[in-house]
Image 1 (cartoon, rainbow, N blue to C red):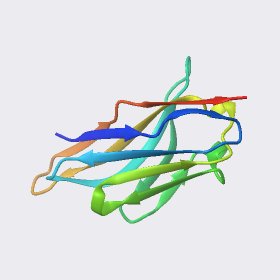
Image 2: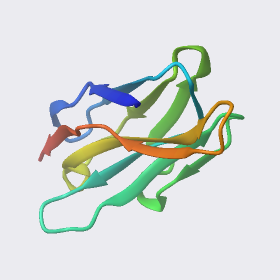
Image 3: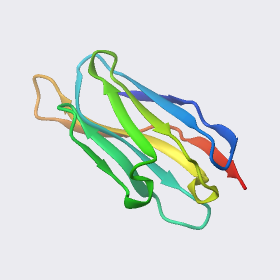
Image 4: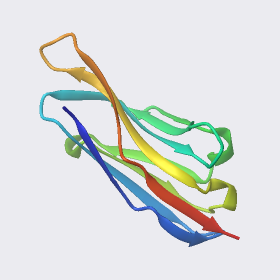
Length: 121
């Protein structure tokens, strides 16, 4: 099994910054891609940013230029630096990791417990 432990959420004023972290455990699991998703009240969960093991990134249009996703492969940790935060960024942010178990053909897709980000106007 793989566990994802998130940290870094909180309350911030509009224009401020937060950095989210997500550490994945699981010695036999090889992670291909990690990412951040968010879900605001009454809305569907949406992709915010993803990063592959090779460093390729993808972003939600509304966060481009403000958020930066990065990854430490050695630590199996993904980060989301969020700058110029807006009230509409308020949501629960979830970490995701997708990959496979080494030596098998089993794949896995795991989620963190979520961390609340609240941006006040």
